[in-house]
Length: 74
Image (cartoon, rainbow, N blue to C red; front, side, top):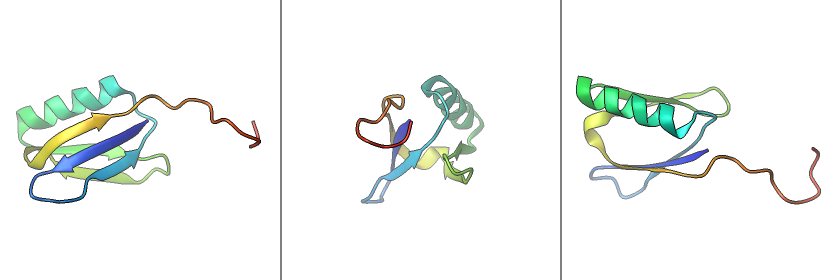
């Protein structure tokens, strides 16, 4: 799933490709906002992205990954 995060006072948005579900991301965001902490996301390559919850302007949760079209390997 592709996630786009808008951060306050930053012109560009942060884009993360992750295997997490929209429900788990929403739950971690709610918890981080309640605790005034960090939102932790893990991307497809295993790298961790930490964003201060109070600096997040918006989060755009994309669609779950669909099978790509083309001649790639299955």
